[in-house]
Length: 298
Image (cartoon, rainbow, N blue to C red; front, side, top):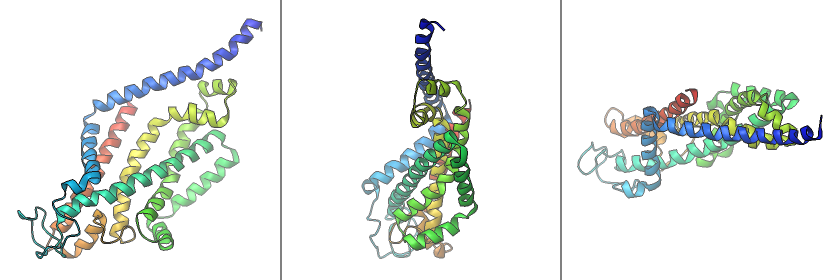
């Protein structure tokens, strides 16, 4: 090899990662344009945005204090109380609007923690493989084998109820599934030329994982995150419904449905409106996830 060829080799090795980075940026621009043209994504995003705004500014929208007790108990929808009152005389509409806040505090936080842990575990096991990968995947299999309700009872009995224990519980149960998805994507990426070029350029393992591979697996991670957000919303509501999660006097939708089911025959509005709100939120998240999936598969 001539001296000119020797000098050119490192330059070529350094150029390959930059070309991969440029291609990744172009791909991200295509994804954004595709999402803006997707009716499924836009409808879901609008509904989701509505509930996010409500969760933050519900005090400006609620006609009454959600804990305020009125003399009229179990009153049907009327001009004074558009969604009626519950068994204690509290305004159902006000509690409905306030109930979005605990739901959209617990679910995104749990999803973010679970996603961060799963992405880190998936990156390391997929890139390094070997004994670490084998041990980690066996632990993942063991965790996935346990039903969520059993894990919830054990964990929440030790940690107690409330938002923080529920967040930690959901996050821990999300890590194995996210790790599997990320690991599968990393196993494909680690065999591509840009990874070999980064190694030749002298990049360390962590640098290759987080600056080279991670940007190229963001698509599956985003889809996984949106899907997990829907699961987190439903799981949080389920735990509250079973009185294992958020407790009274929170207006949390799952807890409201649980307490109102006793009055389902005489005052169905206590359960109906929170159930519809929960359904629209879960559907909106699923529409966003479906929109992402369609664009990424295009």
